[in-house]
Picture 1 (cartoon, rainbow, N blue to C red):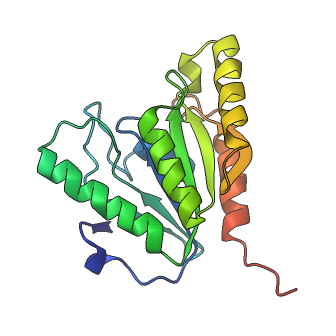
Picture 2: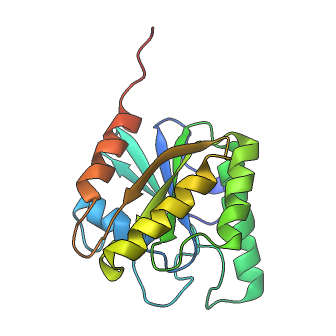
Length: 192
């Protein structure tokens, strides 16, 4: 289900895990890799193709949410501002939102607009976890340095989950680890 405004959001019932990140960071590709379906979420080499919030119901247990990217997009500025506002409103007010997977391109590391989203999530007390993407395109030394830099910055963040996940949608590396995390988020919370 695709949503272009807050009024169109599905009922807030299932636990939700949202995928946020800069345009072209690999959100849709990771959704496809996690579900084992190559065309479930539309992918593109052009930044800004996802222009609405896309909800994927995983068997009535969990809702994966593919958010439009922030930063550069090949779209009109008014459209970019509209979907950026939609994403920010969604992130601040969704009761079933259990976790944000904040995707960071491992080739580039954290950028200023990533820090802005992290600031907003910290203020809203929305738990988020950094997921490094495209790890197959980075040498091991550079990947280790990128991860260490991010871990150091996460120590000062109130809502950040300290564990970083590393993934490659192309090779499948880290996808099983992501599935494990998602199954823990989808599991019902114990009463005691």
